[in-house]
Amino acid sequence: MLVTLHGAANEVTGSCYLVETGNCRVLIDCGLFQGSKHLERLNFIPASINAKKIDAVVLTHGHLDHCGRLPLLVKAGFKGRIYGTDGTLDIARLILMDAAKVQADDTDRENRKRVKAGQKPVKPLFTAADSERVFKLFHPLPYNKWISIAEHLKIDLIEAGHILGSSSVILVGDHNGGKRRLVFSGDLGQWNIPINRDPALLDTADAVFMESTYGGRNHPTYCDTVKELTDLIKEAVGKRGKILIPTFAVGRTQQLLYHLHEMFRLGEIKPFPIYLDSPMATAATEIYSRHTELLDPDVRDFFVGNNIYASLPSLKICTTALESQALNDVEGPCLIMAGAGMCDAGRILHHLRHNLSFPNTLVLIVGYQARESFGRQLLDGVNPVKIMGQTVFVRAKIVSVEGFSAHAGQSDLLRWIEPVARLKRARLILTHGEPHQLNELKYKLQDEFGVSPEIPSIGDTLEI
Image (cartoon, rainbow, N blue to C red; front, side):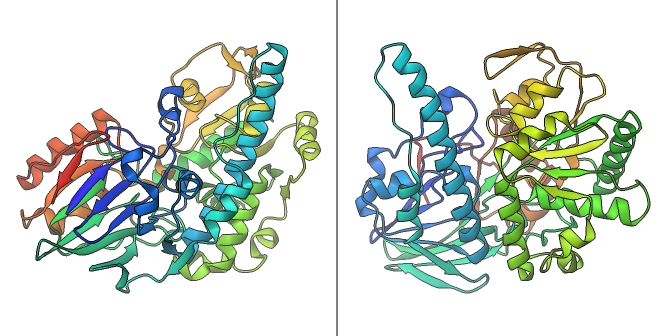
């Protein structure tokens, strides 16, 4: 069995594995590269994938860096089924339609500049119509049930604990008369975190492709993280400042809403205005409400029906651009959650442009920031910054609250792989991480289990 990495190798984004047996060819994920301009240039379907001859695609979850090249794959001739859990496919629909809208808006702005400069217009990477063609190929699967997806090839989806519907993929295929069992971790979550269920553990494998986003370090404990969040919000409220949270629409938004509810319920902070300035996050929250069976049992009551809005009466939803713009005139204390999570697009850029220069503004970074993203620049202390062509001096307090990460830290990754690593029979292939995180996890795995993980590069083909 051959596996070729067409993304997320020595890099976090662009997840895409081509699996080939003697009888079939399937993709595990088909995601966009995100972050730098250099990475975005890789957003195409390599000729070697040969989209017309792909039998099926399996999605580990619905984040853009795992599903974002699907419209390109369909445009290139793919006509097979796209598998994933119900939750994953609902999230992927939302994210792909939002990505198409963002690209259309960005392309319109770019083309206005190009017209003035006498240059040829450009086209978006894909359109809403391209995304709609993808959705026609969606085929939902349950967890923990073996399904044949191609000749002599079957898969089982198990809980990954990352976001709603996320899964690790166990793939068993025949190759040259022998069976091979491959595991693709997808993105793994932390244990004992509200909202998501815990990742399922493995038993055996011939090869494991494991994410390593935080392979080199652990997150703070969840209790410490919630306390840090509470203390920071108390401080900002005391200064009557605005709290800006660049938030990922799926997962992080719902997690924060739950904890704000808990702070108010326990009397730790008096209720104050919360603005959810993200139509996408609002839609994602509705998806969570439809799929409470996929959530941690302890939080299901908060999400079912319209309980979120009843439990958080100070929550206000901003749907239109005018409602978003009106927040410029709202006085603190208030909290504004807006996308995008890495601050590279979306409404958060407008709020940052208007509020970064005020010392009583608090910017809470609550998720992974890719290299060269604007969010990473803020964390790295770049000052001044450029936002939509305007120079802005940063006087706001910028804080990273890391424990809310939807990604497993090093100890969680070791816990997940331990049952297989101790057997010392499986090849361990580390992917989905920046080089220093990959190498730190490699050394840790060598020390803990006496194994020698591999770290492939984009375009490498491994024979299993």
